[in-house]
Length: 304
Image (cartoon, rainbow, N blue to C red; front, side):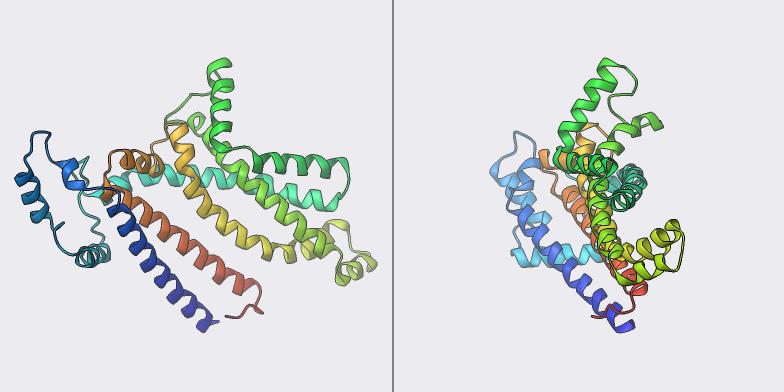
């Protein structure tokens, strides 16, 4: 198991280096940040002098390794738009995104796991049909459209919830529900499929033949063995929720790093965009690494 963890850790480091490479070169193809920073009346000589002072005249690989060196000490450079360290701006917005992600994930598992179990146990019943329809709708509805519809209904028409912003629990309800609905649908469908497969196994039939109660058979034997397949998607859903927050935060004006990324792209504030993308990528990789480790703990048969 130790060798498995070390190899997965090395793979994660290689992935992160690849991400920094892609992010740096893609963003540097988007335009010249020096022209954005200079005042409207700046001459060509002024622009060239500023570019030389900031190191943008150096070869691209030299700029990349300078960028990589800064990342090792947590230095993403200064924001062109806010005129302060990019990492400080991102970290100020990070708690709002984590709050939204946690609330969305809580909604996803509180609905997705029970719904998946009930749907599998009551296969081909009306309950199963309703759960599958809800899961299908949850995966088909675009998050931005659902968010707009909820604002029009619950905020504009009924005046029950605030339209946007962050402050109270009421502000969190709509964005968390929109973000959590899609994830809950994926969890429901995967868990239902896993439960149905496990319920047809011989050891489940033996457990029933022994006279064990239905609850024990379902929860102790079937659910426990189906959970290993769901664990992987749970980790992926957390990472996807971080990425999906970009759209949700924009729709609901939620002051997180997703909305910050969108605004920074519009402002061509490359340093902030790099900081957001890389931090989200690090979170994604770490979550997947943790899931792989937990998977090997739950199922010792997992090998590299």
